[in-house]
Image (cartoon, rainbow, N blue to C red; front, side, top):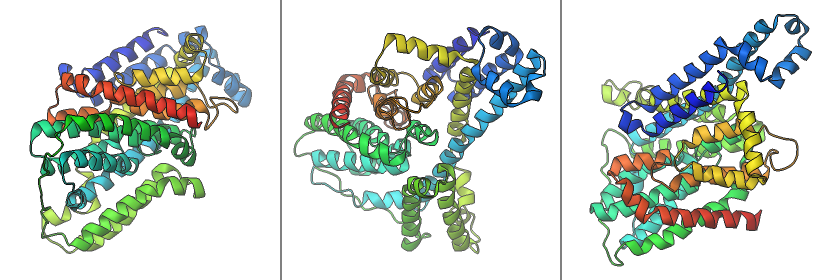
Length: 453
């Protein structure tokens, strides 16, 4: 059973990677994997922990005399239930953060906040627009997250770039820019969120030490991709369509409140030690009160949908359930001890921690980076000193590698898969024209990291 659990996990990750071919939603695969792994652990806990003793059990026995008096079978079963509950508590903070931020972003979208931005995104030709759009995506993803950013930016580019061949260049560059921007922010990607909430990194440290590398990851591919566009190709002039039911004041208040609430999440965590999910829920409460009071007396059903309560009905719950399944599945492997054994194997292969982070970044181009980082956190608990300490070089470099490494292939990140689906980008198109650029940017960013750190 000890060997069966990692085999099941690998099969589950393959199921997630080949979601389109299997025609099974990745959330269903992840949840099924989670149930299978914890089920195996609960059924054969005695055999697993008997052959591979977990040091956590020993610490529990020392701390609770009544626990030590139980038969071994009861000890391991109660420990497994305790570990399941503990992991669920840890994971719930991440899930509530994702759920709250999704609701906020959806609310801004329904009020036309992102559409209004398209009127301000102007340039005289396609090359300048490529730099402008990529720069906006780079900084916007630090606030909204890379996935939400590419969805917003693709909608804007469809209005500005009607020619599909030209728009494909913009769309592929968006993937690289959004992932580069998500790497230096604790809320820019789910993996950086995990590192932040897991206390592997602090927000200020991540921004200062990863931002230079992320800029290199953006600028190197961007400079090279510029030559894929004609020098004087014009940009379509569009005027955003205003929704007469929503006042300009309401749109601006919702947009500014949303951006401010997301930007203040790391500040509240650093100053008040307020957990990340509570910080984002605070912003959601403010918007909830504002929209409820604004639309309370509007009888139209469409206007009621503009309140936060209506926003929840449009949240992609499959994404939330996918994160739940993957993170809990990794928790099962961490509890059973397989991740500890894997960390010893990696240490033997790659003596330098920075090399491990670099290789994991390459792996994130074809493996889900959420599962990859969650598994790495399980393999290497935060140490008191050295590379694996909080804000140590390993976790800092991993924040860069795990997010930007997903740009090496278009299927390597959620943002890439999303853009691929929205613009129907062939896998071979990105592989030939942008994977080499992303690799050069990845190597340049890694070089900058070691120059400045």
